[in-house]
Image (cartoon, rainbow, N blue to C red):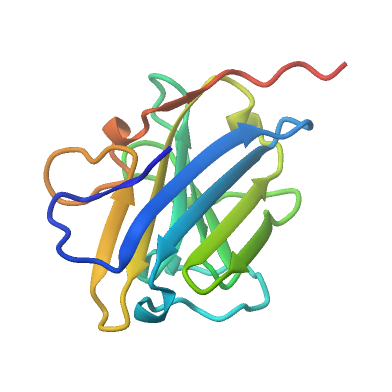
Length: 179
């Protein structure tokens, strides 16, 4: 699915940004982002240790906001092109933020070409992601000059806000029971 820039976004070196999500055989989630752009014009962190880190959303970062239909609690997953990541749980809209415990770090894979970047993250199974889901797939892209653009499947009115429930437009059916 194609992510769209926030309406306030000016000229950007990004030509296209796509994202998708699917269930893994073990009921985890596989999330993928594919960025087509002049990568030299973007500020992308170099490959790193792939560790948990806060504040990734302040720079180029790929994100998913995951919640159940009609439910207040939701998860936020941040994945940087460096392989660093963060996962948080919220009790309600921007309230009760706590680090989300994971049985294993998300499996992150990044592939860079001259004009493309592909990032995938495999989120292990969580009780919070077993049922029907409403998901927002998004990205924050920073240029070398420090300009930030915000990309999402749908932007709610006003300033960029990936946390807003109206951004969670992708529906995913419940995980199938293990056989």
